[in-house]
Image (cartoon, rainbow over all chains, first blue to last red; front, side, top):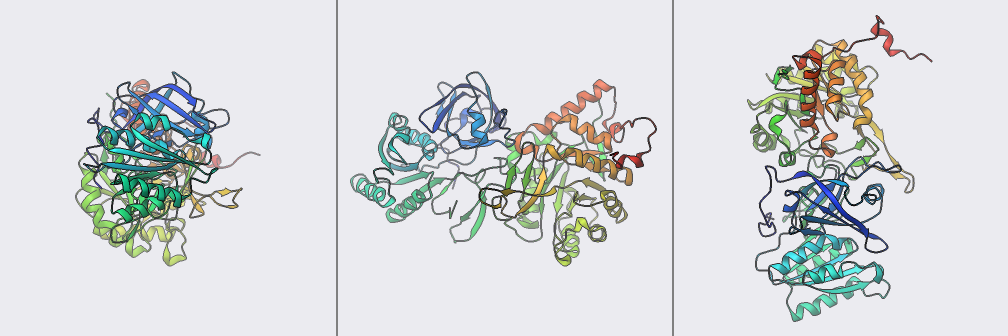
Amino acid sequence: MTMTATAQAEAPAGRFPRAENRCRVVSNDPVNAEYRLLLVEAPATGLTAYAGQFFHLLCPTTHTDQPFLRRPMSIYRIDRENRRLGFLYKVTGKGTRALMTLGPGDELNATGPLGVGFDLPAGTQHVAMVARGVGLATLAPLARFAAERGARVTAILSARAPDLLMSRDELEAAGAGVIEVNDLDGTSKPEDVADRLREIHAEVPIDFMATCGSNRLLGLTRGLCAEWGIPGQVAVEAFMGCGLGMCFACVVPVRDAEGKEEMKRVCYDGPVFSVNEVTTW
Amino acid sequence: MVDLSVTVGGVRMKNPVMPASGSIAEGMADVVDLGRLGAIVLKTITPDLRQGVKPPRVVEYTDATLFSIGIPSKGPDYLLNHTVPFFDKFGPPVIASISADTVEDFGKLAGYITDPRIAAIEANISCPNLRAHGRAFGMDPVASAQVITAMKANTTLPIWAKLTPNVGDIAEMARCVEGAGADAVITANAILGMAIDAETMTPRLGNVVGGLTGPAVKPVILRMVNQCAEAVKIPVIGCGGIATGEDVVEYMLAGASAVQIGTTNFVHTSAMEQSIDWVADYCTRKGIARVSDLTGALMLPGDQPSEQRGAVAL
């Protein structure tokens, strides 16, 4: 996989392609019962981020939480015009609990942009993305990028319940056609999602797929990509040590073209991999 | 202008700050200027190819981490053909680090990677000795000395022995490797630890046990550096929880000739550069002309004999 020039909007801003960006928090508000949106003003190096990359956030310390390591967070919004980055997160542990305490004007030290993001093949006509929960955050910038390049984008959003679905607006604003499915009404079953995608494919052929946030959806994506003979990519999530490929803590087993398994670093070799490479995560 | 240069175990460095083995890789060059470092210490390699241990590989504490990575290694040819050329271009001396399952393999590997682009070889003797039921070489003074002897017999490069802190008398270990010809000791590797998840009733590390590193271990390793420095004539390189320039100075006062920053690189990529600047400012402020004058300059209270420092009054 080549690091695509297509996904990078501008050349690195400084002497180094990655930096400890000292960002200023613009807002940090809940978007629903589970998720929050953190918006920051970022220096030039931070704004070179492209879809699928992530930042490694230095979390503040609070009375109850003193996270020592940084926390990896995929980029939800890249707004170069207003020099802002957005992160969509769910409060699950001490890192995200600490992040929750940041308010407007606070500094956020964000190392990045990090990792290898999505590599959208030139000439892609129709992108289908399937995401569950916060996995959607990772795919939103890809929807915008693909739409800007003239591709049709169909996004299937999956969640436990309808009120936990997010970012329909964000994706529609990016130019995506959005289909929502959930566990409560049973529409999120992988076989049903696959059938809907087959119908869509029969109308307007899909030539690229992207997924994030669910092992079941990864399996579904891998199957459909094989069925249609098209490329597909998955953004993998992992607890990380360094975020820069140095500590080898965030490895996942990855299969190469000959079927040989190798441990690869999510932070440095990924987080985006071909759906055929990733075995489990 | 403060003279920050030091000469340690046959290697001249423009300042005393270098990364600990395994704490930087190619990715660090995307963020900081590796040319500013005193030396560039590479990740340990083994003669064979290794994938490392089963994840999860890291547990986090308030100011420490428990890592069990298992030395993933692409072997000596990858080191010579890819890793060394990548880091050689930045300027500072490049220090290779090796480990092996047997004394003979330590020797052979040291010979194999002897190369003008490598300034010294670190002997990572904290790994299990397969000929001794998996007991770490570094826990056994005789085996440690044998490793150094075997390496010295196979290479002309200086050998730095990286000691394990998981011993009763680290000064004795330092003396043993000095006797075998080591050119410097690095004090120390990680402290063996374990973490358990009460909810799942399982270990938090795939490998069950791991190495504790980070600022929390500083007092323990600082004490060991002091003990080693009093025991040997070869230079001692301090390595344990260093995060700031102040930590660097403390280690040098305790007897270190140079230092290594490890875990902190994972969180603060600028820590090594900031430490170098802080030490230069400190020396200027204190009127110290040469940073090497700091080594062992700790001022002890009164005329209390050093032998009594090990005892704790209850």
